[in-house]
Amino acid sequence: MRPPPPSPIIIVACFVATLSGHFTLTRIGVSVPVLNDVRVLFFSAVLMAFALEIHHAGVHPLHTGPARRTLQPVLILFGYQILSAAWAPRNAVINDVVGDLVAMVVLVIVYTALAEWDRDRVIVVTMYCQYAAAWLYFLYSASGHGATAAGRWTAFGGGPNVYVRVMVLGMVAAAYFYFRSGGKFGWLAAAPLFLVGAIASGSRGGLVAFAGILVMGGRSLVRFMRRHGAVKPLAAIPMVGVVVWLLFGDQIMFLINNRFLAGTIQQRNTSDRDVLYEKGFGLFVESPVFGVGVHGFYAITNLGPGEKYVHNLPLAVAAEGGAVGLIILLVALWALRHEYARVPKKQRSLPSRAAGYSGIFILIASFFSGDYYDHRLMWIFFLLATAGAVSPADRPAPLGPAGGRPSRAAGRAW
Image 1 (tube, rainbow, N blue to C red):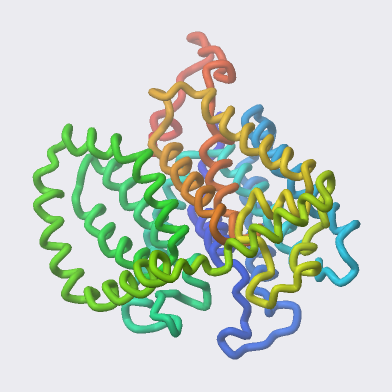
Image 2 (image 1 turned 45 degrees about the vertical axis):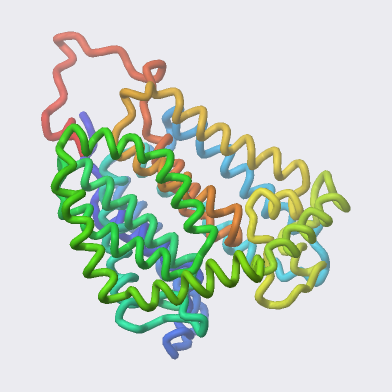
């Protein structure tokens, strides 16, 4: 008998706990010992709800081949990074980094178990959450809140690089629902607004990553629009463009001129990424095998509070984990890619593809910004795309007449 699907409540709770990031109560003027880091409260609630959910449904998590093959390399990477605290410099503040890594261990285990349970349902609910979060962030910043001194859009205490990720993931969700609905333009109409938010963030790396997945998925979008009629979406673009220009044209042109043209091309402002990369590579050369340990980059370079990490995931792992850490990272990514490729292209579900594109976007963005915890959604989306997949080799043999047939409700496509 097929177990009942996971409750949307637990999926939404997981998304909120994931999106909350490093949010603390002190940002809103409240201080509660132990609970200042909202992850303590969120993660406790998620773990208790998850335990009750799987007990009620009679689910045995993490027992299938795809779940084990994809999750284990990721956990080995996180475990090695936690272990590297043993040889970190004495002045390294490892508590925060180790806390982030432990939090990611919890998230990837819970999400992998949910994906194994009912992958497509989990992804669909997560896409709804992404879409809602993008609207919430956009409306907050478009109303004049959260902008930095340079005019870059942010929301709820997160930086511009976090903001652009929420906007682009919102566009991925909009495209997903557009495909899923058979071409209803209402879903795609929000994409231009989210694009405005992405540009207004001023995040160059985020826009490069968005361009990357746009190139990868653009052909599928064009084929779909040809098959279902592209007249309505294309005719509506000028109308949406005029409205967007009237509302945000001045702000967008200010950022384009100052952030992208003057800052990037004329002044060659790299936000010190060249310095960070040079320092990170230097640490890797000095300790090529095991690296300098977590938080070792900041402890050794001491470049200031704004430059605590390399802003490049592979280079950060190489600098703080050495060649061993870099190999484990590559093996983890290879395992995810290999598991995804086990399912023939024509058999990959739309939710799986949407999760895959979301993960690829954050992977590309990880080359330009973020610390280890900022890339948590990359691991989550890759695991969602692969952990619940059933390849022809893993698919059980069909039941005979005595085995019965699954009910329509159990086999409902999400």
